[in-house]
Amino acid sequence: MTQLALTNLKLSHFRSHKASEISCDARPVAIYGPNGAGKTNILEAVSLFSPGRGIRRASAQDMMRRPEALGWKLSGILTSSEGTQEIETWSESGAARQVKINDKTAPQTKLGALCRVIWLIPAMDRLWIEGAEGRRRFLDRTALSFFPDHAEASLTYEKTMRERNRLLKEQIRDAHWYKALEDQMAKCATQIHANRLATLAQLTEAQRKTSTAFPIADLDLLQSEGESPTSEDAFREAFAESRSRDLIAGRTLVGPHRSDLSATYIAKNVPASDCSTGEQKALLISLILANARALADTLGTPPILLLDEVAAHLDADRRAALYDELIDLKAQAWMTGTEDHLFDALGDRAQYLTVSEDDGISALSKA
Image (cartoon, rainbow, N blue to C red):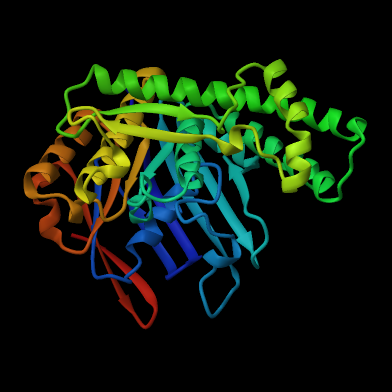
């Protein structure tokens, strides 16, 4: 199995990092330092070597270092079975971020084919007890790791649905105004639904065939109440039949934007939403590891993992088990923690980086 690794990372005017550079190998990277020093900002920078808005879902403007607000730039060297790629991504004065690969301008979608990045951050800890939107986002981000075209289908669906919603709010009743939009939505909805189901199948298989110290989840995709379209024709018909209800509501009430992800802790036969906080966290870690294993099996290369403050929520045995599984995966995992002892079980199997902050500027040093 080949490895995927970011072996050099330069941050310029990115968040708290005025000018930082990290050189490393393919081993896990353990980053520690006090709260507010800029550890998570490093993980956010790595996440931008994949398509999208990164682990914080922030705008390009929000990533600018203050007070200069000059824009920001990230540069990195990515090594994989495809060879070495030089990647740059930047934003000038808060404008939409741009990408260059080997000094050639490229769309963000190209990053999805070169670099699979998956993450677990503290904001996801309430995934099982908050609204369905967060669970859909989690599932779609996982689907994107398997299917790089999933983002385009999702964006097209959302854009077309906004147009349909505008007609609904304006109380337009002529069916001809809706047909072309619903045809496009049905096409995208079918692809989104199929990708989600295939993703759940991949995660289920990866959990089934691997011994892990973390709980196994039974996963299910729940569609909007009373609706279960799966084919393009079925989605098209569902959109048409729902128009009268949608006109009253002023928005589209059926489709993949209404789906939900459910999980059950198999060993206890308890829904994830009813599990303890620790069990919910362990289930999330289990799914992230399953995602990584499935990608490694499918692509022959594990993804880059970003695990923000993950060790703080685990006892010593669970931490050691997590590190062992990461090493077995041969994955470059970027992890953060406030104390160095949280990574003791890794020993020389990892590389270590300390982060400090002085007058709002992050400083890095190798431990």
